[in-house]
Length: 371
Ligand code: UD1
Image (cartoon, rainbow, N blue to C red; front, side, top):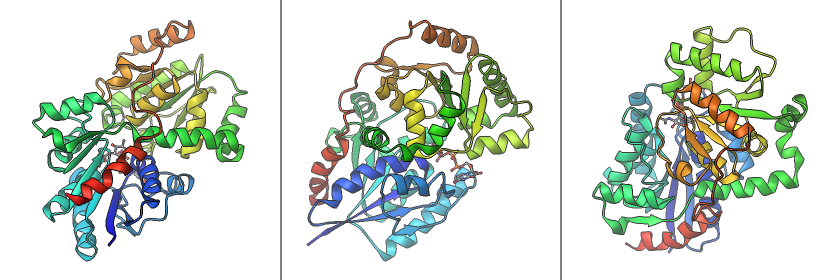
């Protein structure tokens, strides 16, 4: 008899975590998989393109939850998920990361008696102002199986009193997708058409790649204005490529922040996964408030200056190429100068960030089904 496993995803950073595990489980006899997309992210460039490039099948269900306040988004996802799971109940649900859809899915499943495995469990910024931190803490406190990317995550969970027999150190699954992407973009230039166009436009000169979308950076007009003044200053010297997240674009428009864009500041629409990885691996340095990009930069050994006061991924600071900048822009310019002079710290490989996390999870899954 076969077992049904559902993967529940909703937002851009979930999709590169889903792809390797889905593909690994396809080869297991007696496992049938379905994908539920809550629809938290719905634009083609925030969602569909990732399914195409990562060759993830079209979701079996798309619940069309869309945007809203945190409560609306989480509650709408819960209502829609409950209906969906009442009609089609799996033995195990896999949830990913820390977005609102992750928490919504976990709550619905545990209340319906469906076992939940959380991929990327145990990360903590210890900053409860971050909506994602609430999602992480709550998801981990009720999920049945906690699959962690690094040893520090195990320690965080143990400190919260979570039983050790629920915790499995499997490594960083996002690096599985990154390894595959690096191979594919070398093989086929057409996968990174947009990135090639950008590189041509700047005549392959040194550039800084930046992404900002955290509420702490973009939702307060004064903070966003100050950040963009800093970007403009950077663009006096370096090319600054900025793929714009819809949240950031909305804020910039609403508060008329972007006038007179310097010639070296290239604002572009959200990029595909392959285009972004191509730019990331060629960048002089990264400026970001994303979580995943801190990890990717560490793996790629590209300096990463994080525009946040804390991180749930401290290993990228201790062993990797990441430095927390917060809003200390003097420090930012000092670090850019260190990088320029070749004095910036070097990144070391992180155990189990090796492209084989999905394989390790795949080996464990049958045990979770038997319990
Ligand atoms: C969400 C996640 C965040 C993750 C980020 C990656 C939560 C709490 N936040 O933040 O952890 O780092 O995704 O991108 O789950 N929008 C569009 N098109 C889309 C999606 C969103 O235009 O396809 C716009 C809408 O105006 C929306 C805003 O972006 O209101 C924010 O989207 P939302 O999903 O609420 O949060 P993100 O900022 O994307």
